[in-house]
Image (cartoon, rainbow, N blue to C red):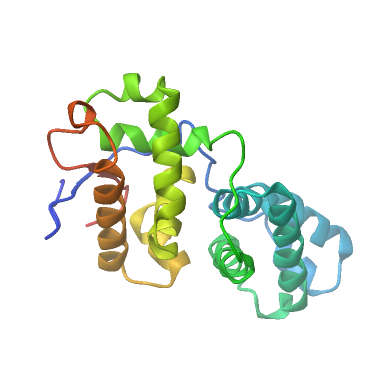
Length: 218
């Protein structure tokens, strides 16, 4: 079933993480409980389990590897400080991602760019923006246009793009991390894609509405 939202965005059933960061949906058994008891080895395991997606989000938003590393450390320092409040019945990753995005946007005084664009994010994104994604993915000019477009998005739309296209979170998961409802997440993605598509040459834009994938949207 592929329902269409009021904004005209079509939601398919594929997953977008072939070039992105796999979502850690489960935590090792008893990990949070052991960390809550003061087990430092458990905290090291906790850090090693979740550091990659947290760092990737921080880098995608800040475009600064040094700032992303600092945010990574601050995120896990906060996690340790509030470890007794962490839930033990579900993955802490959505909470960690929420802390990460909040830290990023509170730290950014100005936009910073890396010499190399986030190609994984662009690769997952272009298929929903164009009718010829193979050509776009091979075009340095178009990749740079999209990178600048992502940089210019409002923070909430940029976060939606990063969660959905880079990490492959579902709409429901993205909405949980962003502390909004699914309808709001759909809207943020729709307007972000609309803005990015407008930057592309006419002949390379998709003829139909963008297809956004999700596994659990009713």
